[in-house]
Length: 621
Image (tube, rainbow, N blue to C red; front, side, top):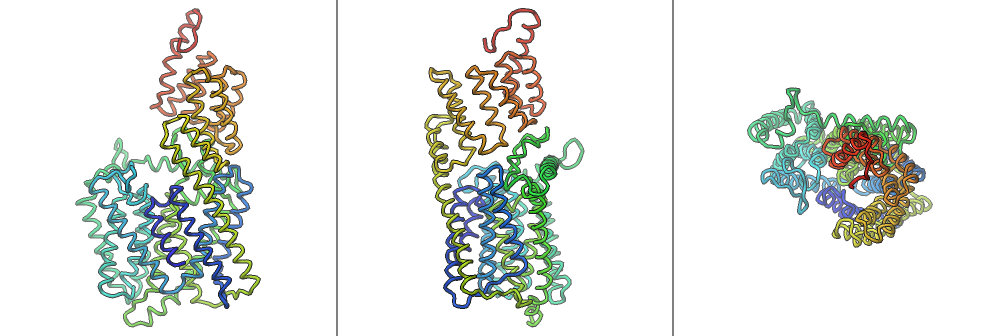
């Protein structure tokens, strides 16, 4: 179990943060192996004892709530993936807390994470120095910033900010040999450099919070005060010199800190985040108790989209607001209670983890170092979560949950009351639940692995080609709840039908059937309604198309592309005045908009023809 968990902790950050489906499937498969071994251990151990602190009840409560919320979700596919990830992280928490709680296992986890973070940080520095736009062999649009093995530099910052306080704590108070302490010093320097070249301002603030928490505690400790003061001075002086003499001269720093119109630092990121937060707040107010659904924020966003934000946000860029939007007050209260219980547990554990450190003359203790460093790392993650969504990046969530489980297990030093002796009924029940989760993972692995394979095959085919449609249909057969695949198949047939061949009617009808098929799979997606209306227009059924355009507009009233295509509909029926107004509105939403620009040029002469009293010819005549 130890080496499988270490394998996940190493593989996930190296594989782009495990955000790609193929990478997450590998992590999920390794997790299934861990759970099978844990079930066997629970059943075969003659004297099984379960550590069950108060935080475990909170994790269990949220897991049960997530499963229940799945059955009422509007979009089954995304809810299932999100809830399976909740199950994955919850069971990792229980396994780590109950099987890796020993000092040796804790040190294995700590040193593995520190070594990994050091290597990734060095890779990130190399990326910036060489102006590389690649993460491994994949193109990344971040040449001015470094993401290491992550696609997003912000998520690399989220990873490093959790490990940096841990390395710092082992450097200052760990019971390690001189050579190891020197290596830890190099690791701290490398991680700070790696964090700096991400140019993640929220990551910098969060890491500073974690570091100052560690150093602040040690400054109040007579055994470590001098070393903490010296290290703090060195970090401030060295960091200042690094920023002023090198970092400030890089393109990434200039871009992130540039001044616009004399109004101070560029506020684009802050403005867009505020708009995303406002949308999340309105979602929550409309669905206060249960939220819009697991991972539904991105799919409900278009309905709440402000006119000035045309991008697709993916997440809210604030894990706390995202929690309220997706899970409602019920989910928020459970998580808030968990945070409170966790902090109370830290205070209960504090005097007991310090006992060994106080008893040893040198004041060095690996137990105390881990407790202090992991607490600083989770504090940094909590701060960064106000500006980003690291908890939804599998690699970072896995690291955070591992640190959380190990810290929660330290409560056993304070009291014996949280140990539960498992008899045969409890052992059988726990083993049965674990194996049921493994069975769920196995079914999902089978379905999603086939889907990912055929989607990858489709990517290699020509855009909207029949071969691409065939591969996508096989992907849909593997996962018939994926609305996006159904939509993409419809796009293939619709685009081919627009070429106007002899069979264009059959192709257009086939496209319409796929859009209609996708509608119940994601009832909040306006584009299935839009494309259905366009297919009906292409088939000459203009009266039947009206209701679909109305449904589409309800689902994305401020989307520039959808508004432009509503204008296209009015061009088809010859209402050039209405079309012109929609194209003007689309351009006001997003100026770099060729669809609206090109069709606006068509509308103007048609309206002049109509005003002159001459017969208005069809568009493109």
